[in-house]
Length: 470
Image (cartoon, rainbow, N blue to C red; front, side, top):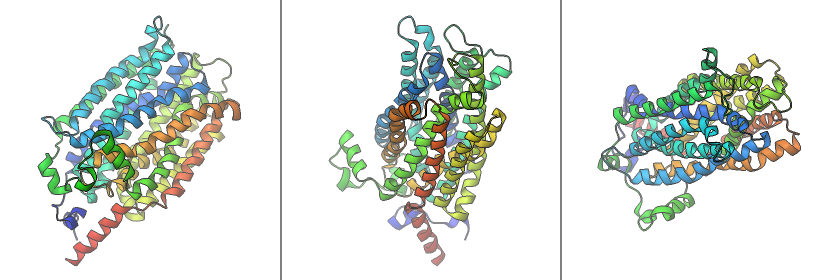
């Protein structure tokens, strides 16, 4: 049985099989994610040190970071809902890519320059506001990308599609994470200016803005979307009995209530995973500065702290590089051991990687800790969406991808509300213990994914058996 003869799950519903795409088509369809993750990498690797430079205490960082998931929780379901219903000359998902890219690039330029407006409003609050605008814009651009892959690919190509998307995410994140350190080694100063931000950080954000827009434009110009009539041939239309008399927020709430069982079960896995990731992004720079570099006192504007921040950025680039390569292996591994076991093993490796940071004293060893984290990151960006795409009702890909974001944002919000207090009052300001806890959370996620019902995998197996019978 050749791959070209595998039936789509749609065949059992009297629909046409979703056409397969070439590797080049899948690549250009997902290329915009390279720019999105380039911006995310700059945000994840540098927001804490920018806010610390503007005067934030380490235990306050989670409260500033909480803005991002709060905005995502609101924006993604709304964008998903309306992208399901949009169609104009640009396309269905593409208008949101374009608007999100323009807004994100503007925020990337303004965030490191927040200190220049300190005479009007405290720089810390301007910076926090820019983080909010940036994350809202990232969400506008990002959410429809997940739906676009599910729109255009049959189940037999879904793992490949999300793996290529993860590869491009990794590529963008590698360069975005390492860029401040690369610029510093190229001679750009990492000594803070009068506004508290070093030139290598500012220039990195300017480059990120340009890359973001350019990558999105590649997807807009070189990928296709199915017009509504053609889309319905492959996916069918929205069930009339559930949504006919609902619109706007009422329809979003109705869809939330009727979410598939698989999505609910994946919610627990996502909770453990994203609680851990949020902790890593918020506290790793301070954990490395204090636990490995041994910094104490008021070190937030010191050259040594910036050096620790650059090391963390390079380490983040390393885990993204590992994720980029590992993403290409995910389809093969999933075929051998199954989607759930692939994700479980990857999350376990990430947990071990985070815990191992506690045991190192040489900054050069950070890259070895990042190997397991890279495996987990690649799988987190791909496997839950592969599993999810097989259980979503026709015409609901955008809204359910947006609702699924609740399970990403909620653990970050909870972490943001309580993480700083835990670090201050339980860990005595030692952020390394937060990193260790994050490692254990990833291991909990690895266990919980084994209990998820993978509806898409069951359907695909049934269709393969049917195809063999024919």
